[in-house]
Amino acid sequence: MAKVIISCAITGSVHTPSMSPHLPITPDEIARESIEAAEAGAAILHLHARNPEDGSPSPDPATFMQFLPQIGEATDAVVNITTGGGLGMTLDERLAAAERASPELASLNMGSMNFGFFPAAERIETFKYDWEPAWLEGSRDLIFRNTFSDIEQIAERLGKGHGTRFEFECYDVGHLYTLAHFLDRKLVTPPLFVQSIFGVLGGQGPDAENLLHARRIADRLFGDDYVWSVMASGRHQLPFTTMGAINGGNVRVGLEDSLYAGKGRLARSNAEQVGMIRSILETLSIECVTPAEARTILALKGRDNVAF
Image (cartoon, rainbow, N blue to C red):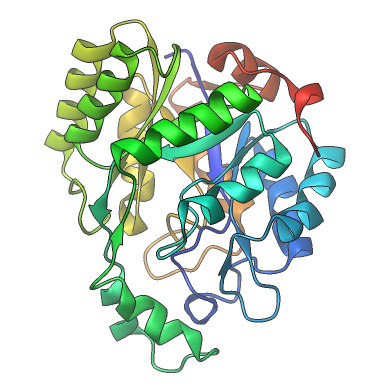
């Protein structure tokens, strides 16, 4: 690709405050980190919310609305609101913020799956908040749920109801076939923004063969009807996003996916990670698209048509 969309996932719901002092928690921190990431070159900002008192994941639309207007006033970046939320949230809870904000883009996980982040608890000596160890350990015995019915509801309520398009999060090759099923039923429409995800415990592993296989299957299923992107968790973030870009993909970085900016070195901000991947891409003679270009590529409804 001559040009690449950089997405930045600002805070997520997996990492906890004890893992990094740089993880944004409060609405002001999330807004600041988002604006700086956009200034560094991110065309899309993928957003979760957290309880400002203790950093726990929050589905509360009121919390989202404390940072979304700040971001909208300061940057032209595309806002992408989670519908994944956090483990244990109901579908209505996961959809509440997106339905309130009516964003241009929202994430949509393409299936139910084991989603394990419990090994992280073993690496933390002292927890800042009481909720953290139970949250991490709880992922040992919880399934992230997105059934066919759930996906249908999300497509109906956000896609048809708000004109929101989706970042289809595919944690395994089977998720690509699920997406093809919904495309065949015309419940989703091209261009499909397909995010292939690697390195989450319970999903496809961070092996180069898996990345190339995911690309081949997506090509076979979707032809010219999709836009491909790559993200990977932890230390695999930069190698896999670089490999994805070389193979014609867009890229996603951010503190949701990795807390690091090099071996053993915590990233001080989301903007630092955006700057790192942008530098790599530009060294490879790959340009980064603007938010306006991303809107055209993904056929988004436009900044004037959101509710924040």
